[in-house]
Structures are given as structure tokens and as C-alpha cells.
Image (cartoon, rainbow, N blue to C red; front, side, top):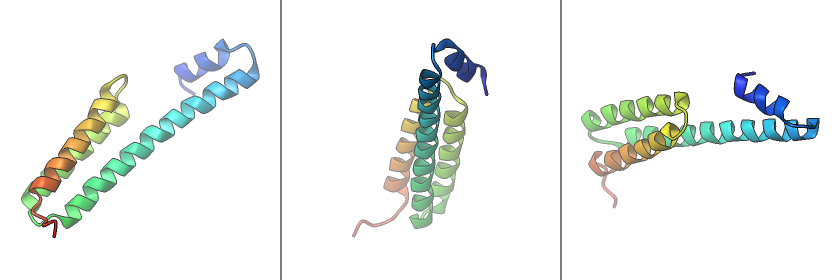
Length: 101
């Protein structure tokens, strides 16, 4: 258990509040991980469908690097990294060479 979790648990007056705080913290981490998985899955699907591999591979590498920054970051960094992954996916979709018909 890290310092933040132990401070939340010890700062609450009752055990039920501590369990609620811990549950909220774990749920936030699970949502963050699920968002990263879904964004990277979209990048992988765009890589599979791209006809221009020279555009797709660097874009997916950039998305993975942004996902690492998001997983390790604190504060606003995960949000901006997720926006960056979405922007990379839009560029990959636009330049990947796949026809929409």
C-alpha cells in the first residue's frame, strides 16, 4: 500500500469510510487503466487497417509512449496524454490510407 492509500485509510474516523475511500481509489485506477487499454486497442486496430505502414508504425509507437507517460504521470499528465493518444489516432486514421467506402 502506498503512502496516499495509507493516509486515506488512517485519516477517516471509521472503518466503513476507510473502505469507501479505498474502493473509490481503486475504482479510479481501474478506470484509468481501462481507458488506456481502449485507446491503445483503437491504435492497434488502426495499425492493422492502415495501408501506409510508414505512417502507422511511428504513430503507434507515439501512442504507446504517451500511454506510458499517462500510466506513470500524476495530476493533469494522464489527461493530456489521453488527449494526445486520441490525436495520434485521428492523424493515423486520416493519413493511414484506408478508404471509407
